[in-house]
Length: 91
Length: 270
Image (cartoon, rainbow over all chains, first blue to last red; front, top):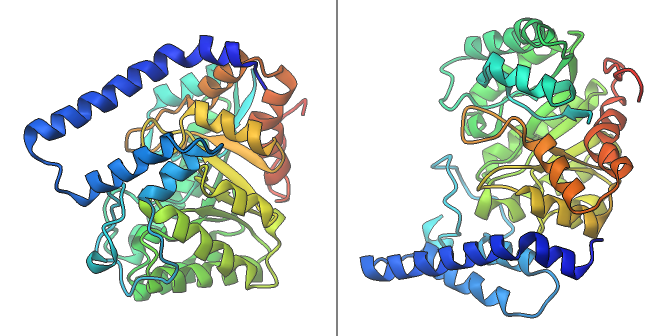
């Protein structure tokens, strides 16, 4: 595994740019008044994983967007996934 | 650099892509059957597609010196219609003896519906009855965790299925552990947005090791990068991973898995 300094040398600027992009995205959503949406709710919930201090933040973020249920749905009414679970009422 | 592209939907790509892949060190391509981006209207559409995968595409790949292998199925995106799925399943054996067919795939789930699960079980039975390898598509985004669990349960409930003969593709951080822990192979798909980035795939290798795992581009008609695997290899180099380990993940591992089919011929110098 690469040493920590190398990881920062390699990826700090890239991660910094992505973080600013996330901040700008949230500002954009606010300006558009579009925060009342299950996808944005999931997005905000997923952000908490970043500050968890746990070693699997990426996995935690993915789980925050995931369908937590275990049973097959009765029928597929669409082919597409939107990136966040809409909730049991919307299946 | 040498590599195998173990999951590329080459019928959707141009000859320029084939050329770029060959120049980047690609030694062979493997093409699972896939959704066309629209629903085929009849079993005849699938018949023509299977002819394309077993006859035409190998000739196109050969123009660039690339052996072409394929996998057959009705994709889970078209599995809600069980009558159509049954018709497609009935014609697959006709193509199973083609010299470039490695197995059944990419089967799996899309929205995790009951009909999709029924059709998945029928594909598993077809593979078991014909001693075929299995290549599995796991669902997208919010549906992946649940779908991967359902797929693993379906595979494990059939005692004819050997996990080491199945690759579970499109794993991410929240699913790779369950796949490897159950003895299956895992595929990481390198997509710009919706699956793994190269850096995340390399992180997964650091955390889970480089046994029973490969990387692929899954290049198709959508936003995807045919050279994603060699680009990830470059990133592995940048991160200080030694050339032998890189070669294992992008070249030796695909060969190890696909060599379980007698139809796969390993490139020279493995």
